[in-house]
Amino acid sequence: MEHEKSKEKKQRGGARPGAGRKAGGKNQVTIETLLETLHAKTGGHSYEQLLVEDFLQARINDDKQLIMKYHNLILNKVMNSLARIEVTDSADAVELKKLAFADALAKLAGIKEE
Image (spheres, rainbow, N blue to C red):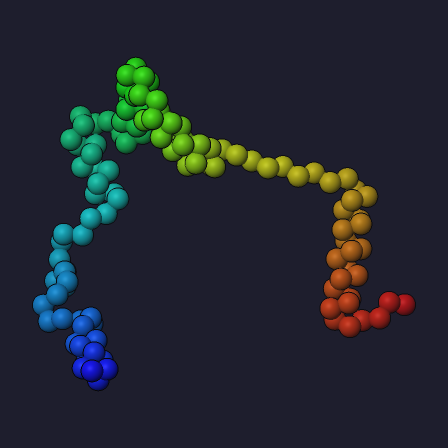
């Protein structure tokens, strides 16, 4: 019985003759093609314009659930590119970090302090 199950498993999966897209096939979907089609079908509106219009329509309709989805989209995608973190250290802090790094490197390399 075990032997029969192993034979079944060997017959499943793997490449099959004639499967998949043919070489040189033109039916591959790309983001660029989708955006160009969207632009053409919407009278020249960009994807960003459509998002804004849809967001405003959700606000006009007072669709709280859809409004929250748009806020999440904006906060997760757009704000990441706008957020900046600036770290400034005093000269003393930089010197302490240099000494600590040199000390750690010396310990890793097995160099004894003099």
